[in-house]
Length: 204
Image (cartoon, rainbow, N blue to C red):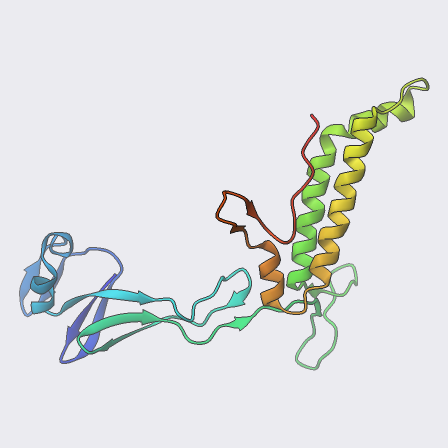
């Protein structure tokens, strides 16, 4: 990204190289990549430096709109203070604080991060269990068939881990703690782990 600076003020932003007219002179798009920094700045074109000091993971935080400023002969894009997304669910209400219902009369809900994350866990567990569902179905339909022990143990382990993950999510006191559960770290020996844990190894 570049900006055109005239009299110390940003007058135009270029998100990508583009031809433009400046002081009755037509400049082609390739000056953005072919000209040196000094050559571009001589006509007022400055590459934007991105400062993400205040920018946080948008999955967990609401970031303000970025702004571009020009100071000390440098153009910088930066963000204001971010705010954490809601952890818990919230009923949708109108301007009079009255419940807003769906077409079936059910309360509309803005789901918080904990519910969203637990849904992901439930869906992952269901996906892991699905390939072995047929063992259980067969056992209910065929009298002399028994689900193999390793399959039974695996399915139980998946459910146990699912419950553990959901409990860990519920126990998070704030967004930082919730995010930390999902963040992978490397211990320096090639072991990459996260506090939330991993699913049991699949058996088929």
